[in-house]
Length: 116
Image (cartoon, rainbow, N blue to C red):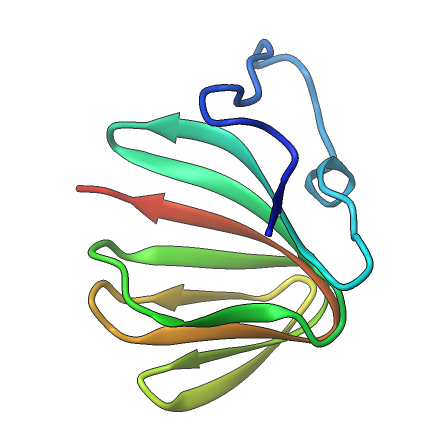
């Protein structure tokens, strides 16, 4: 996975600035690219761009996570149940449930993880 920002180099701009989330992370051939937007004790916001066929293998997280699809077509599997998601849709991955992600087509998403 490629990270566009190093840990601690999150977006530090004033609230007045407006950004296109989908434009803040770029696709890369054969790769998964991530960019951390916020990293706090209470949670994180990370953008991901998956090239077609790329994904994240099954894993669990100790906190609930919300996926907001920004572009493309993806598959989110939670506890063995596959959910197809497209731009404009969102899905919640519950804490401690095994989940994986796969790009059916090039796919961008925002991941919001709440740590409390």
